[in-house]
Length: 273
Image (tube, rainbow, N blue to C red; front, side):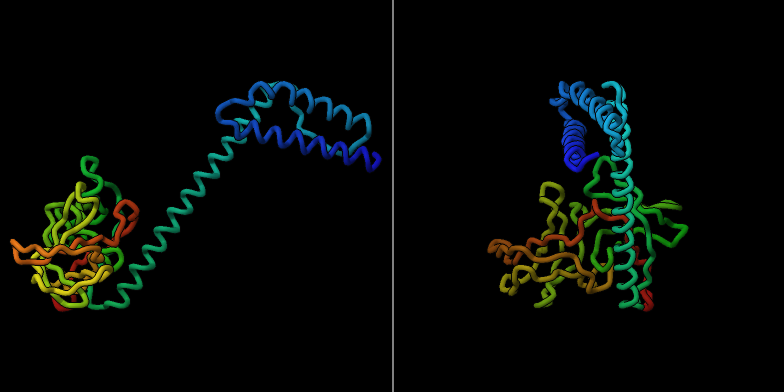
């Protein structure tokens, strides 16, 4: 084949390929009327290439049905690859969480941590309760703290032999001794529930307590079974209540509960607390 003819054939092939790709991504089927003409062009191109002795091989589609079958096959391959990619991302996320937990445990040898997988959520309150694959057989008890990796996620509120229920900090039932990290001022942090936009509130602080936006809020150690210094969240705003003679600080948790795949249960400390 001459250079000119070869270039012409290649150009035609590229144009047809672009057309096929357009049809493939056309989810609204607006290009469906073009399928039959394109099939005809493919057939004619293959015949012309054969007559000219070209070594180009084009897909051999002889009907719209065959083209549709090929498109369905390609879609199936695409969906399979997307599923594999999602699984790889989930595995990478889990690996990163496990690595962070290991680093935290190595930095705090006095804490006895038990790794657990998140296996589900309470369907009636998915933003407030999660389920882990560790239970009483593993030493898990009601009231234990659940971390990821050094940030407090919630408290164990129900235990079975092989699983446990964890109520997250934003639930209105949660009350926990907490303090502002910089000033050391202590109070009690309360969950505000789903209507509270996933926020917490630190109450009962002295009205003249200094605070800054972005300041860390940590556990105070005043709650039984919960050691001091575990990160709860960051302060985002403050409101001095004259009637109650206190400062109230709005706190944003540092954990997106729905993204968790693994957590650690604080089953004890070397001091036996």
